[in-house]
Image (tube, rainbow, N blue to C red; front, side, top):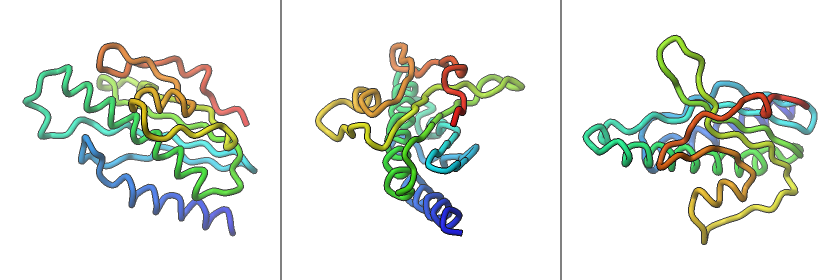
Length: 155
């Protein structure tokens, strides 16, 4: 029962901390959580742009969405290792809705170990995400789709 309580605590804390983002008020949508022994996987849908941003130029909307997605990824990483003390490795992936009837696009992924160094403030959000183990492709201000093949669940 202890792992179930820890997962429940993780989800509650995730909803509490990520109810609203800094750049978007859209809720974070969890797609999948999986706990196997000391490994954890979490997939989520990146927040869409804020409705108040609809009148901004496209590159500003893209920047806000990208910054929000990277901030969410770092927060989820921190929550995993705080709320789930037995977890040693985590596979964290963020997806974005693509065109209608198309599968979601993988935009951020990280295969992260607990003992990996944590990088806090002092650098840009993009650099902190990279230094904290996340992989993504930033074209201008927009996160582009990356190959999901190298970020499959392999516990």
